Length: 446
Image 1 (cartoon, helix red, strand yellow):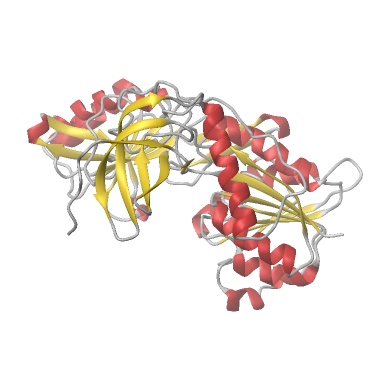
Image 2: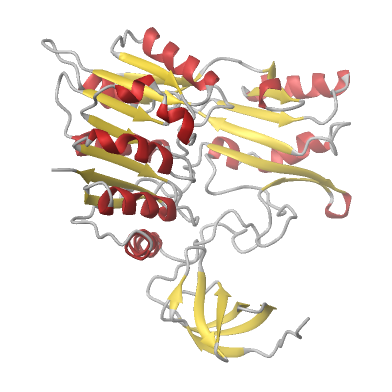
């Protein structure tokens, strides 16, 4: 292994990556410097050496960038949950915009005809779902709860979190003390978090062994006293069961459409409630919906888009239809119930693996005619279903993405192989201070 030179060196940062690392060329080789921003002059120390690149850490900022700020969280730099707190929120959004449009041009060889203004909302206390680690570490005085350290498998020693919803983020110390007082303190490795629009909190404790009567009683008493729903998960997601607290459905809402979406703490929902309430209207406006139209909602989940879409294609004279497609049977059952319970009769739900090319060839719902399509795929993108849809020559598609690379890949197919134009694209600041880039793209075929 090559020796790491710990001699401090000066550098002027040429670029910055999504995860907050400055980029320079040093001795003919790329070097990524944690904690630096574009244009800054810094003193750094090398921390790693690999064949293709080196890594380093800022030890002093000699000439700060205009976008440098004091991180709002005291654990930034130790905790790996956030990557960009040293940059102003405007700088963060500029970095993410550049990442999106660079990916579209470099990977997809496409250029958006216009850009959405970034969708923005609160930047702290916004995160309403999360997976926290928990570990009993006697050398650090007990149980740690939170996210992993930056660049490390170990949990960061933290007492609160500024990006988590305060109902959880300000209870980190309390959770550490709670678990530390249980007999099973070294057998509870994970806590799933969910917070709804009414600030009701649900916590799912992953328990590797059955809890003793004493532990169950202590956890139950804490749940009742705090007004928190507590669940246990002894195995896979299907084993989650309520333990104590005011167990009741969680809910988030789309006030613009008179729609509520009940959910369980195990369900996927959008992390940032404020952005979600702006994202849905932007997507529906981009679809240019008319009463009576038929809309295909792919990767529909609980109906986050489906239910507002159904309201938007129906008026007193003409009713359209929205077909939601999802692979998860549990989510589909809840989506159907959500529509039924709110008297929304113009939705239909189909189960399909949208990554399975062969299965899509025989999908009866794909043989139907649609006026509009909305896609909200996972990080892997929507390559298979885009190819299956292409022969329909649907006029307008809106693609909601959580990965610029797969969006760019799919955009290349739509534009260069299937006759679409990339009419508009832009970021949505769903995860401030992190390296996640959420975006929306509108494709049109004339």
